[in-house]
Image 1 (cartoon, protein in one colour):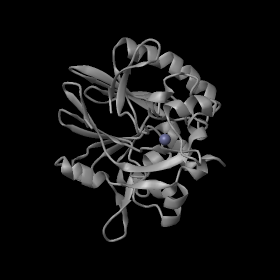
Image 2: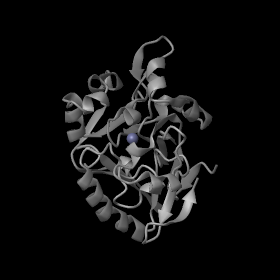
Image 3: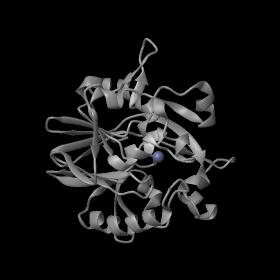
Image 4: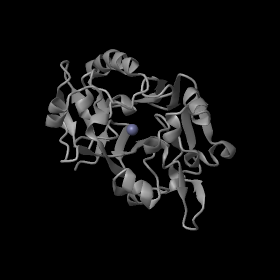
Length: 280
Ligand SMILES: [Zn+2]
């Protein structure tokens, strides 16, 4: 596996955020199984294997993490329920790259569902909770944070308070409202759609660009604007966002980077939404 995407001044690589299985249908909403299973095969029980692959984005003077995986706080029972088949291993992955937790200065959360925010807070060697990246500003959209603090009957099952223990008190919570430049060449934009405060990340290097659309574009099989997840809170918004956003990035020949895709880390698309180049 080629494990990184080089964009000149920006280098993107992927980490192990703890991988799990989901009912295949939940990833494709109203799309019939006969269509999606050709592209993303399910097992006999209809489960598909998903990655939770946080991105490490390295640019001059900054080590940025996009989303943090499921973390190491799940009980055995929860691991069974979510069919976790590979453990969260971000700290060791970073060490292999010569980085420590303290070297990460920015964490961007596309949104705060447990499979994206589970690694914000970790259990340390003495069994206590602590911030995984104790020096990093944590970039979250204001609307998303409001919903974390006041979850509804549905989101209460995915915005787990333990995933944010101590974050606000640390002074490292950095709420943004809409669009913001986070570091040279790295920008976030509020999208909504999947959750009310979902955001995307744009990366513009000296030799190419990439767009990370989080759960609006979770795998390469979701390039069709109508192929959306059953988990989307505002499905028609997701369809419209994909119609609106994908052509712009395609015209610029940007890479699309993925968080949940077991087959592809990133790809480029043609006008018809077909993959023209893949990083797997
Ligand atoms: Zn997700």
